[in-house]
Length: 112
Length: 115
Image (cartoon, rainbow over all chains, first blue to last red; front, top):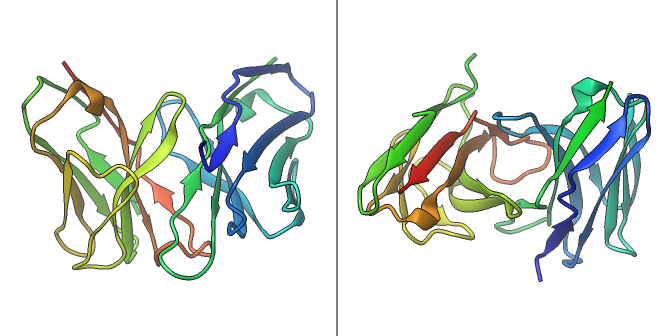
């Protein structure tokens, strides 16, 4: 079983829809949770990160972490065609030689 | 600032050939990483270098070697390429190793096809 599971999609929604992207994980040592966005034929770029449980909002994007369920989500409001990309969740513990562990990525298309 | 640059952008190899993927960063970062990305597998860490002069294995190091040439440059070498190494390779760097406050910045990737 992978440490981090993410539905690879693809996910296709109309412009303006609310998008929900999710990951589950098995390692309870993970403390920081990140979302990366990757446009086609580009490298990933950090979108936002959250520490421990709770919500974090940045413009149209909201990241949620539920450590009790080992479940994280990224919500995109008022989705735009420019949001079309692959979204990867990633997570890491604290202390020692920690390494970032990525989910498989979800390919998202926003249709005009 | 160019950020993280990678060469080549695309390469075709025959089984058994060798090649070196080059990576350089101009952000004065201490830590550098090599990942491979395969469909359905996400990004997997091959090797990393926490600081100049040190390198360590990641999740999938077999078949690869690395060299941290200096603070700026971190190369990945395939000594005898195999079809299973067909992938997109990403180099990344961060100010410090795996501190979340220090974002990992990724290069544009190298697409490698091994026939």
